[in-house]
Length: 114
Length: 115
Image (cartoon, rainbow over all chains, first blue to last red; front, side, top):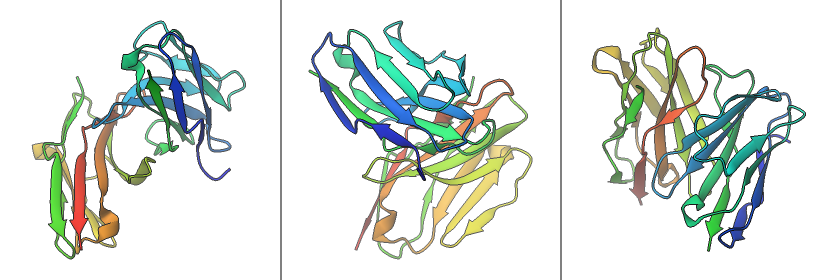
């Protein structure tokens, strides 16, 4: 597609459930990023892939968060045993080569944990 | 450490007014890149501009202009003759260091333009 596509757009889960968020980057983009955006805040970095390699996962808040990009295209962010503090908008971005190349963002997935 | 500060939480103007959004950054890197993004109510972050640390030339794109000053570590954004469609949250962001590409965002400035 023309832009970064994320699904679902909205996700409601009960505390303790596992969730999976999908990101389909712009075709041909090598780099893929996940960010978490709390209400009224700027996005905060979670993790970064170059092709299928996860080069930086320093922003993942706990071992309940896991991301993969097995074929270097679509990526999934999984959160296990969700907690209320996981409620946020999860943004995915891709860029052509990484580095100084602009990152192009999807619409995000708004996750609400009840 | 790297940090971006947007001290203005919210700005309200009337259409056709000029408005400047402030951005101050901190980094120890000599090579870095600064960005501005717009986030309308729909939620998608829209890329507006990138500037590298070696290019201090100001830039103008239509009603938008950017003023980069290394001496004050600032990268301010001005909208001339604002319009209602400019209403959004604007984020300034920084990426630096040769071994990581992550963006460090400020907390954003919410701009409301009233007719």
